[in-house]
Amino acid sequence: MEFKDEFICLMASLYGVYFSQGKAVNLGGLEDPDPVMRYCHYGRKTMKPEEMEKAWNKDQEAFIFAVLHGYSVATDQQRAVVESHLRGPHQIRLYYKRIKTRVEQARGESSSSRDYPGWTRIIGVSF
Image 1: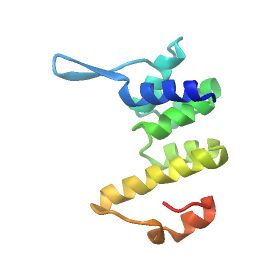
Image 2: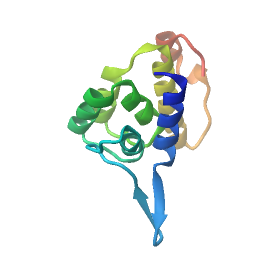
Image 3: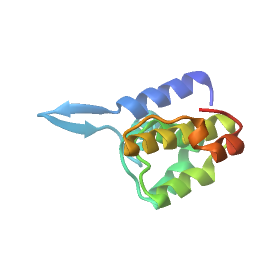
Image 4: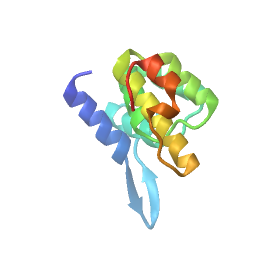
């Protein structure tokens, strides 16, 4: 993905929502013809694993990028879909940073790479 496309995808996945009458309204959808609107959907909505596969088939790297910057991966099945499509050290590092953040939030504390020695070995970077 080119840098400009990454930036568009990032902004859409993070800010693909507006508020109307006090309620959040997510933009886009899985079948939206506009790719930017799909990126909004990927980053903001929780999808079933089958929908995630369909999104991967349609947008590939952009789908993974939006999901990794959004809020849509929560279950083991969803994580399995994402993990099966990770490509390259950048995506893998970003994925494990997201996992680390969720673990820290669940614990209510901050941690370091020494708490995850296997991750450092697997992806070759420290957090």
